[in-house]
Length: 290
Image (cartoon, rainbow, N blue to C red; front, top):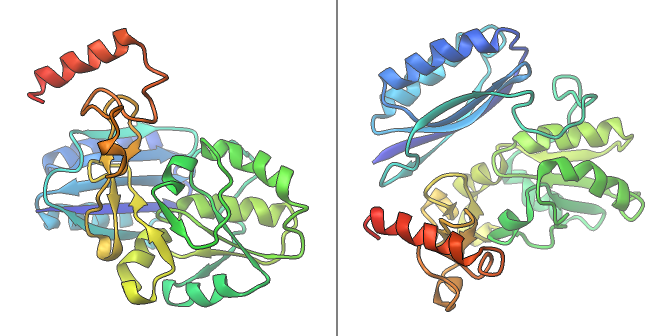
C-alpha cells in the first residue's frame, strides 16, 4: 500500500535551483515517486512512497525551510505505485496562470471548510465556479457549478473577462482539486475588484475525505494527476481509466465504445490520431505486455 501526499505552499523561495538538487537527493534516498515543482513563489506537487515514514520525513524537511513552517498536505492511499518515477522541476510558477500581478501571499478569497461548503454553495446569491479544466470537470463536479470550459488554467482570466458582467452582484465560490488553483484564481478576482470571493479549503480532495457521501453535493469522481486517474468519496480509487494515447480520463461507459482500444485509442482521440500514431501506440502496448 502506497501513501500519497498532495501538497503546496506559497512562500518566497529565491534559492529554488539549489533547493532542487538537495531535495532530489533527499527524496530519492527514501524511495519517493511523483512530481514536485519549485518556483520563486513556493512548492507544489504530489508524491507517494511505500512507507508512510518517508512522506513524514519529506513534510518535516519542507517545513524546515524558512517560510514553509505552515505547509499542509493531504493524505490518501493507493494499492500500487501511482507514479513511475521521481521528478523535481523548476518553473516560473508552481501553478501556471500567467498573470504577474497575482499574489496569493498578498490577498486571496476567504477559505471555507468542507463542513461549511454545502451551505455556502446552496445560497441563491452565490455563483459556484469550477476552476479546473474541461476534461477534469467531465469526470465530476459540484451540482450546479459553472464550467468555464478551459483547456488550461492560463485561459481562466480571459474566461472571467468574458463572463464577469453575467456574474455581477453574485458572491463567488470557487473550487479546484487540492486548493492551489483557487489561491491564484481568487487572488485574481480580488485584484479585479470582486469583493466577496470564497474558496474550498483543501479543495475537492479534502471535501471528499471529510464529507459523508449521504451529505455530499459532489457528483461523479475527482480526476487526479496520477495512475489512479480518479478518486471518489473517502478518497477511494475511482472507476475511470487513462487513455495511454491522449492521457485523458476514460469513463467505464467509454471503454465499451468500439473506439476504445487499450493503450491505443479512446472516443476522445480516435479522430485526432493518425494510423501511424496508432501503430506506434500498439507497438508500445505490445512491448508493455498489453
